[in-house]
Image (cartoon, rainbow, N blue to C red; front, side, top):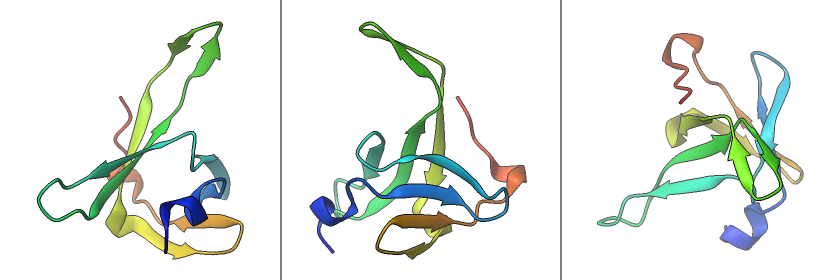
Length: 84
């Protein structure tokens, strides 16, 4: 799958049944040695003019369970929820 095919897909937490963001508004953490995706970095704040307020959620790639035509389903344990 190409990165361009992932862009625009909604990221949904299966346990909470809530939308976390849209890929394209998120960052990918990539291992420079292997080229593999390590994690999704999802912003949690809002944009006011040219400044971003809020933090981010880091979702390790191992919690991505399914990539569908419209969304990416993640199953993320709450005890590992890492919000900055």
